[in-house]
Length: 156
Image 1 (cartoon, rainbow, N blue to C red):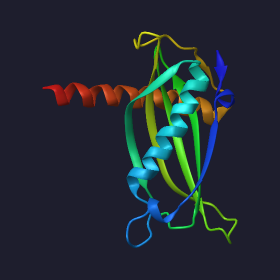
Image 2: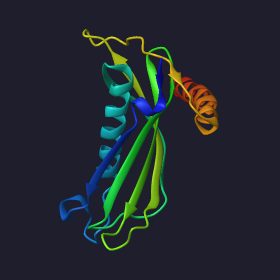
Image 3: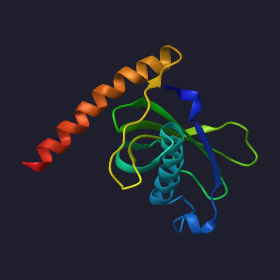
Image 4: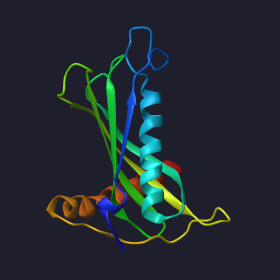
């Protein structure tokens, strides 16, 4: 069993011109790539195995991230299931001359741990350490059921 803080990840990037559109706003796909990288590292730290992205849900773009901004991506496991885990990702952005970070994006990623043959592999349980983590842990089960419902309905 592992605690949430055992696999927390903080990734920091700076937005360069090649990361933006013609008016200096960070490409959404580039941000999702950074978020995916942070959550992959987080899932691999939790499971001690290679992990792959299974789903991304509820990517919320609250504010634009601009050229020159410093972007901090925080990833943490909210719940581990049998072979998969849910990762919550929060993105903060700040100007170089302003120490006030703004939450610009959030999302939930699901990763699956793989064995050496590329098959889903069992992982350790997650132990929530405080009330906020316990609430996220419980809500993760509801989000998982909703994901399963979405997949089931799309197959029909």
